[in-house]
Length: 374
Image: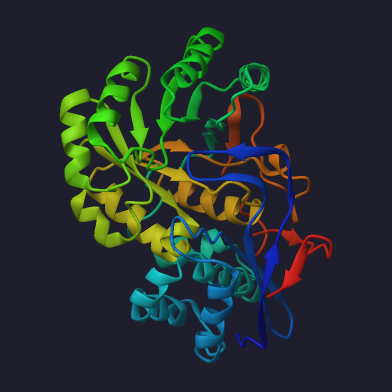
């Protein structure tokens, strides 16, 4: 495989409705799309830079690509790509979303060159340790953002219920009465629900966080990133006091963080945050080998390109998969640039067994009104 060209684009697709959490309100995507070309094929990749998660934006992504483009153009095989990922570990740590977009595009075009799916490409390379569980269908999580207007909240919960969802993730504001209204609304409408909450590093004061969690603990099984400190030591004290499991997102960013996981901690693996599919698969392998569970998460506004990558990890390492966040596609986006679009069906179900075409198996249309070269 010889890469002849590589470019990064900014993708800004409007949402059908705004989405809010404690750190940000979004009305459109903020996404990197990478396009790689060989003589015969084009590969597409995606990453989601988030300044409040990894410190990235479009300008840092552009600088990153310019710094490594000469080396990337020489990557002609999966082994060369994996070696590069290992050698550039610290650099990728600082630019995980940008590298995710680049790596995904390289894997897509490599699969097309070899006429195999990226799933097959990676499972053959990890044949001794993958396919642990091998689920063909997974159940997605219903995600509720922060809203002060009760009518839209109720409409969203009813809509999820009618679609058969039982697993819920609720973004919380820290305003106890407002958050309890949403939690109890879900419990009333979906009696069989399982609820976790996401605080997005909301609380600076540990005691305030503890007081809040003690009030909601009988309703939820876990809380994601409650403290601004992102301290595992602080999280352990919280857990010991309230008994709620704690999900790590911004606090879990690389394979080095696996060693700090205790039984009450659950990592949320977001491929863009972790620096691509290769690194995420390696983390999932280590977690599965050590008997630890994990969640496969996504950034708000991901297209089906990153959902395809999620499904690869879910298919390879489903044994320890507690929850899957994704599959929103055109439910949230005004349009999805990728076809087929991977979105959940009734019951929140999403098939993982689509891997029949070469590469990621997607056709991508970079519509000019949503995309610009950076």
